[in-house]
Length: 473
Length: 91
Image 1: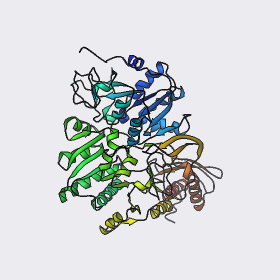
Image 2: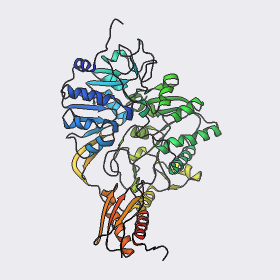
Image 3: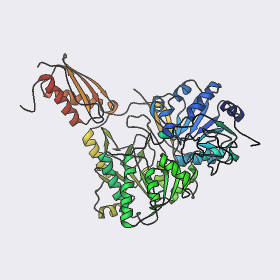
Image 4: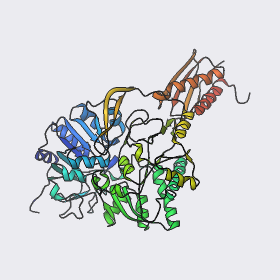
C-alpha cells in the first residue's frame, strides 16, 4: 500500500483538529457491548480536552464512565436517542448543567443532514476496515473479533462530519468490500484491541419472552394485524424490541403460511425472527438500519436481499424516499400510553430516564398502521395513564393500543375499530383502560420533580416536543 | 399480643417482603421501588391490616417491589400470623 491512514488514536485526534467546545459523535451498533465511546472519551480526557459535546446515536448502561468525564468538565453536553443505567440516573438527578438533547433516529439523521446537528469529529467503530478507511460492520478475515452488521446509524456521521476517524479491531487488506463507510469520507484509521463485545448487542431493550402475559399480548397483537385490513400480500412490517412485539412475529408467521401471504419487506432493527421469515421466503427483503442480534448481523454479511440503510434512508421525515413512508405496519412497545394515545418510551414512571426514543415516533407517524403493545400494569406501575410523564410519540400517529384487558383504537381510525370488532376482538375505550389501572393501583402521588430542565425532547421535525425535569429524592 | 420475629413474602418483582419484630407502637420502615408515588398508600395498607388483626405494637420492615394492595395485605397477614401464632384464617 502506497498510502495509509492508519495512526494511533492520539495522533488521529491531533490530526482531526479537535478543539475544546467542539462536537464529537459515535454510533451505538454494539449497544451494551460498545467499547468505543469509553475508550475515546478517556483518551480525550487524558489529552486535556474540555467542554465537548458528545453526540451519540444512543447511549446505554455501559457508558457509566461518562459520569466522571462530565464531573471533570470533559463532556458538558450530550445529544442521544436514549440513556440507561447509572448515567441516566445521575443525569435525571441533575448531573449536567446543560440539558441532554433527545432525538429519534430519523430526527438525528435529519438534523445531521440539515446541519442543525453539526459534527466536528466522528469516531466510528467498525468490525473490519482497510488502511484507507473502507469500513464495515461485518467481519472479513479469520482474525475478526467482532460483528455488528448494519452501520446505519453511523452513515450520516461518516457523510456529514468534518472529520471521520474509523476505529477497527480488524485491519484487512485493501479493498474491504462490500463497504458501508467509504474511504473517501474517512481521514484516519485507528486499530484497537476491541471495538465492541458482539455477544452484548442483544442486551438492553431486547428480550425474548417466555412470560405468559407477553405471549397473550403477542397473540392479541397478531390478531389485530391479521384483521386490520393491512395484512395482505406484499405488506411491509417493522417490530420493536419489546418481548411481546418480538413474539408477535411468530403468530403472524403462522397466519402468513396458512393464508399464503408474503411480505415485501421488513424494516428497522432486524432480529433473528425476521431473518428466519426472510430465509423461509415469507419476507422478500430486509431493510436494516441496525442488526439487533448476531444472526441478523451474519445475514447482512451474506445475503444480497438484506440491505443496509442509513438513519436518513430509514426514517427521515424530510425525505419522501425514506423507508418509513413505505411502511404498512409497525408494532411498538411503550412505558406509558395516555388517554390521548400519546406514548412515552424514555422516562420511567419514577421520573428517571430509562430508555430510548429509537425509531418510535418516526415509524408511528409514517406507517399506515401503528400498534402499541403493553401490559396494563408492570407491578404497581400503570402503563395506561391519564397523561404521559414525558411526550415522545404524539397520539395522532398511534392507531391501536393492545393490552391484556382489551384493545383501544384511536377514535381517528374508526374503520380499524370496526374491522377488529367484526373479527370478535375486545375493543374498549382507552379511558376505561386507564380507569381499570387506577382501580387496581390507587391514585399515585405526584412525582417530586425539581425546576431544572435535564432533558429536551425534540420531535422528528426539529421542534421541541417536551422537557424533562430533574427528579428530587 | 406477644410478637415474635417473623417474615413473609419475597423480593421478587410484584411482591413485598414483610418482617415483623417486637416494638413500641406501630412503626413501619418501608423501602419501595415505587416509594415516590405509592409509599404513603403502602404504609397505610400495612398499618390498617395490622390494626385490623389487633396488633398495635410492632416494628415492621417492608421491602416492596411494586406489590399490589391485595398482595401487601396477604403478606402482612401471613407475617402477623407467624409473629403471633394466632391463625386468623382458621378462626
